[in-house]
Picture: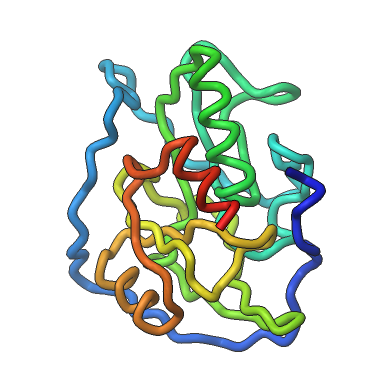
Length: 201
C-alpha cells in the first residue's frame, strides 16, 4: 500500500479556522463491541506524542505531518522498541491497520486515544490544491477513540491522504461535514473490511 501513498510533506499556507468549543458537550458515547479495559484495572491516560516519536506503523515522526494522531495501550504486550502505548501519526494508514493486525494476533487493547478535534483550535492548510487539517500531540488533545464520531470522505486530508477525523461533539462533526463534505461513522463501524474499502474509494 505504501506505493500508493500521496506526498506527506508538511502542508503550507496555513489558514486559521475557528472551531466551536462547546461549553456543554452533547455527544453520546458509543460502546465498542468488545471489551476495551474490561476489568478492574485503572484505564491508562493518554500521553504527549511530541519529541520526535516515530510512528509504530511506518516510522514517520509524529507532529511533522498534518492530521489526527493516535495511541493504543495493550494489556501484557507492548510495541517493538518502547513501552506502551503504541503511537501513530495517522489513523487510516497507521493506527487502525496496526490495531486490526494486533487484534488478530490476540493483543488486547485496554485504551485507544485519538486527536479530538472538538477539543482543539484546529487549522486547515492548503498544499497542492488540497486542504489538510492540523496535527496536535499534547496529552490533553486526545479523546477516547471508542466514544468519538469520525468524519470520513471529506475534502480535508490527513498527512497521508484520506483519514478519519474524530470529534467528541457530534454537532461539530456534522458541521464539518456540512462545510467540507463526507459523512460520519462511529468507532464500531470501522472494521478492517470497511477501512480497505474506504482507502480504495
